[in-house]
Length: 182
Image (cartoon, rainbow, N blue to C red):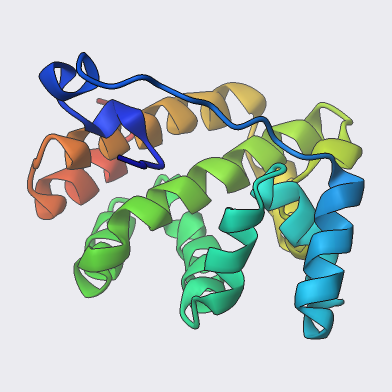
């Protein structure tokens, strides 16, 4: 059995298998792989190399997913509402997640990556940023929020992602995520 995430399998199933982990390849190999197989992706190459973290299959999935970039961009646009302290932003987040129910897990992953990048920008580590093509928008958010608030929101997004994995209602998750004082 091949799985991308062994944590999603029951322990009784895992106990009957041998786990084999494939090491990540270097950035140079990833660049050669993406450039050779997808020469039209020159513009997104720096992002793809960082986002894929040495896993060629992830690059294939991203490039072949026609909705990836749309969801990624809309996730960044809606991150403003997630971070907002305005109570009405809860409804914006709820509406966005309701409209993208089937992509909710990916949205949480994007939000975590963006929050990570914002914190890295504040820490003066720009060479470690994954979403290098969204640097200007991330810089705006980095100037607006402090690191403690962003760390707290990262923890909330992780908890929301875990709640989704436990089949908690997406409406409940989005409203809980928007209540910053909880």
